[in-house]
Image (cartoon, rainbow, N blue to C red; front, side):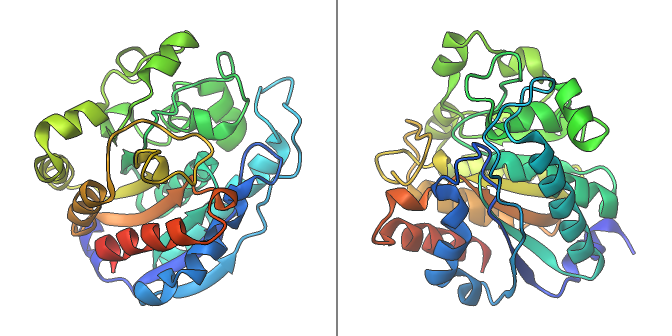
Length: 303
């Protein structure tokens, strides 16, 4: 059976809560899985709910050797996410991982590689998450997620998962970045230096091309190369003015309809192995209105 056939003959979506939030302060992202459940996501996806993994980070100290907050707990949480994603794929489910912050991504990719071998990553995010332990201000793994999984932050990656890269830079398609000014202020690396082989369609390119053309371009890049891919969505790809329930809002200019077109096109690929959703801060959404709107977007794309 080919890899594509393994992916298309699944039992459906398995929703896995992964309320890992890398500041160690129990910030509002830890409530995101329950907010999406309350907004009806599980039923709308016709999914089975696995429940939440015990991956909440409570240690807010920055590890002096590795430079990442709550590192020992992050390692344990990453291993548990990897085991769960791998087991889900092995038993025919398609994982739908609800974070938490972008610190959930390494575990998801470890699990995918364990099941399917090398794979691609479509990284839809208002930031490129290319900080490293040497230039990050916060020490949160979420801001280093792409650096870690591509091996640019090789020492951190090796300490976290024992090997790098989890995905080759040339197998990364990143969509929606609008964070260049902050990286330049922090004297952090740009993609051309850190991951020169990655394909980048930043927020400006999305606006220039239009959402549909961007989606078609992305799908052509993925489907034409025949490898399974993981889709990671940080909801801060939505402009902070339309979706303010975020810890790190970005001025991407991307609205819900544009994001729906992009996600729906990617979701239609038979090579889609799984999805992770991150970055939703429930404390900025006391009435649940933004959780309902994001749920509608996810349902439109993935149901």
